[in-house]
Image (tube, chains in turn brown, green):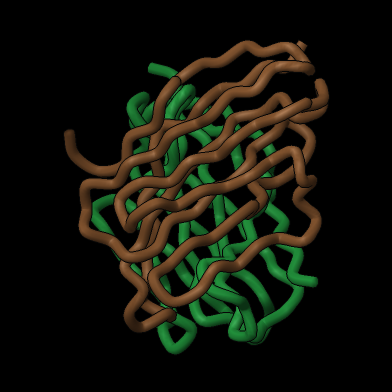
Length: 115
Length: 114
């Protein structure tokens, strides 16, 4: 495996289900990100993890819960989602060094449908 | 709050044409600007990154320019090919951003037909 991988690629869940999205990066990066891409809005940053700090978008509902057990893995735990949460969830990673030169590498995404 | 706008939203052209995609942003205090490509059902691939001190970057048939003071960037695609069909996203990294925060436009969906 190379780059950034995400599983599952597609997920259908009911509003009462609990599920988790997984992301793994094989690039040796020290920062990982969750983004939401929906048809109605531009790509939105949800959460960021790095070795030094965690940044959380305050507008993200608590039904989304991130977990970063180490620098290579990132999870997004989902609980009691709403239909409007249906979207493409993208994971990315980067090597945080000199910020103005930093590039983020994206995974293929998980297409989520909430019924 | 930084807002990024991309024009046009969609573009359909025959193969061989030279194309210009536009991106504008409201706050000129940025570290850099990136152009990404997104294929259907896939993630984003970085095409070009322009630092705030630079005016342009080139990669193959792609050339991106940046006018930071006016809040504008253009992506020029020379001699377009059907394989260029994808959605092109522009993103800026504000100077005062927290770690990893990029602001994206909605993208330009490009179709190049043979």
